[in-house]
Length: 180
Image 1: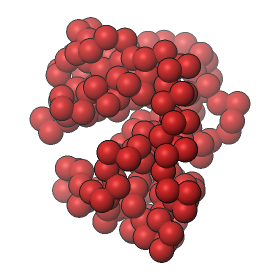
Image 2: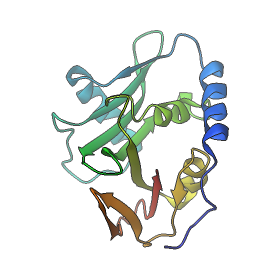
Image 3: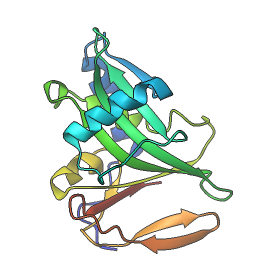
């Protein structure tokens, strides 16, 4: 396992960053768990800003968090997939996509969305987060507490009581990231 960057920031530093960005966002921004009626709009926002596989969908059992401005326009979407397990981690949360309207970038919206990645699940769940990103976005994830690996490196995926090593071969987003 070759780290692209140092171990992710510690949890207190990450929490302080999340609180800071959340406080600085327009107070009219609303964050909510994605529901079925949000999925078409979330898919359109993601399609506009994230390279996804042709013909991709948001299945009924997947969701995430959306952000809306004062007019009700969706300005951000976090799409996640979760799998439950018995063992050290009760849920593995795959970060499938983070999309932010260009007018809202660099204001902390993506930081707050990712900070809410575990919200759709039971609060007592012990999550393991994973995903993949472009090398240019690696520092963003590292500052949110994720360990980011070199393109093509394997990462440890806990499955129940076992750990398997996985490599993601996505040329658009070749760096794996994870956080326990």
